[in-house]
Amino acid sequence: MANDVWVYIEHKDGEFSPMSFELLGIGKGLADGLGSNVCAFVIGENIENITKEAFAYGASKVYTVEGSVFKGFRADAYAKASSFLLDKHKPEIALFRATSQGTDVSAASAANLGFGLCTDCIGLNVDGGQIKMTRAAFGGNYTITVVNEKAKPQIVTVRPKAFAMPEKDASKQGEIVKEAFSISEDDLNTKVLEFIKSEVTVNLVEADIIVSGGRGVGSDEGFKVLKELADILGGAVGASRAAVDSEWIPYEHQVGQTGKTVKPKIYIACGISGAIQHLAGMRTSDCIVAINKDPDAPIFKNATFGIVGDYKQLVPKIIEKFKTKLNR
Ligand SMILES: Cc1cc2nc3c(=O)[nH]c(=O)nc-3n(C[C@H](O)[C@H](O)[C@H](O)COP(=O)(O)OP(=O)(O)OC[C@H]3O[C@@H](n4cnc5c(N)ncnc54)[C@H](O)[C@@H]3O)c2cc1C
Image: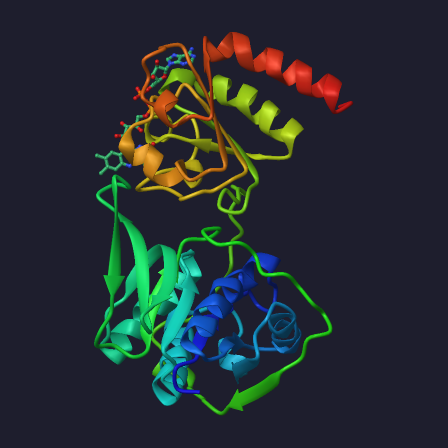
């Protein structure tokens, strides 16, 4: 149907996580509002198992472009295939996750098609037949709602974890539409020579618990204590820009306007004052626990629980408590 809602399914060489399918939930909500269908589109090599999962998470149709040229992610190859699909089928809207892959493919597709792109949405709904997109502005101090009256498809990136995961039903099936689209190496500007796995393996965006440190942590030694707490809780370590700039922890851990946007179940902020640029990346966490020795620190205004004190004394005590409670 011409006003279908499409969801781009990201993967790395056929490897995916359940989070790859998270937008099918909000996609279905939009499709219901428009009286249309939610469809997935997948680009890659050997993607059969991904299409099955897409049906299980609610797609009624899956459009695919397959070929050896799509082995290994390359933004220009994937964006050419994505632009081809979007131009041919002209769905009402195409949703991408606001991850590095989703941002790459959506931005290049929008540029190829000559359309705008609404980035990092945190709200999407249908009102009077129109899709309204809500996103943060001015460092997270305001939210704005955008309506795109001209472009079709509307191209949107959605902040990871901004919407509930759809339920999986492995018995669901649907229609696969295999599209023939080929490009040669000569059509592409990039070649993947080698993949070098980052030594920093931190997945802040998908972590359920984050223990984060700021300038108040004082040193890289201080971050070892936070890491111990994060490990006991099965969480990840985050940081403010001040801690990253001090070289106590690599940039991959930075949370905030110029770092990662996270929405864990629990965010424990140690020695972080709560500047708006930091809050922009974590204020929608389900539960924020702030540890700060200044009772007037702005972070307390956003915290679910606030503990006034020195993290050097408090965090080791919290670690001991959890060790006892969790038998570690
Ligand atoms: C364009 C732009 C983009 C930015 N992007 C980001 C971003 O992505 N992420 C980000 O974080 N910042 C960002 N910033 C920087 C931001 O404005 C703040 O400077 C930064 O967040 C401050 O980090 P902080 O809270 O760790 O340090 P501070 O503001 O210095 O706060 C340190 C806190 O630690 C407390 N403290 C000190 N010792 C202890 C102790 N022993 N125990 C407990 N508490 C203690 C203090 O009371 C204080 O509240 C950006 C700034 C700009 C201009």
